[in-house]
Image 1 (cartoon, helix red, strand yellow):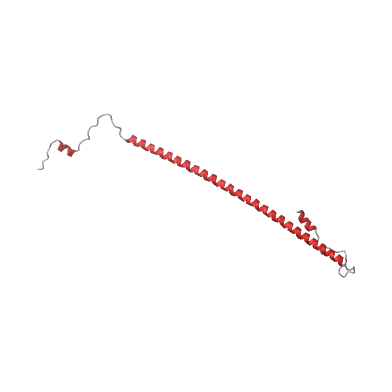
Image 2: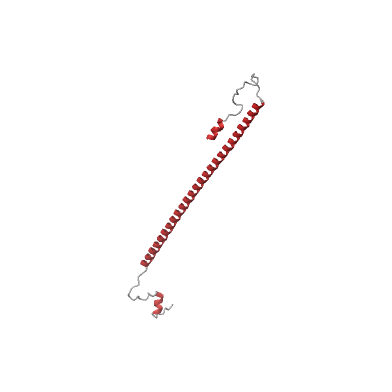
Length: 152
C-alpha cells in the first residue's frame, strides 16, 4: 500500500503548471542545458514509475500465489474431512449390518430350536410296556383262521 501511495505521489511530467509562462508567454526560451536537464528528469521519473510498476506487479503476483496456496490447502482439508466422514459412515454401516446379521442368525437359531422342541413334543413317547402287534385286517383274519370261503 505504501508503494501505491508513492506511485500516486510521483507527479507525471506535463500535468502540473510550470514556472514559465505559456509557449507564447514572453518568458525567456529555455537553454539547451535546461532542456537536457528536464529531459533527463523526465526519463528518470519514467524509469522510477516503470520500476515501481514492476515491483507492484511482483507483489500482486506473490499475493495471488499465496491466496491460491491457501485455497488449495483449504480444499485439501475439506476433501480429507469428507473422506474421513465417509469412512466413518461406512464403518458404522458395516457394524450395523454385522449386528443385524448376528441378530438374524440368533433369531433363526432360536426358531429352529423351538421347531425342534415342538416336533419332539408331538412324537409319541415310547412306552415301557410291550406293544401288541398291530391289528390284522379283516381279509387277513379270514385266511389266517383257516376258514375257506366258498363261492356257490
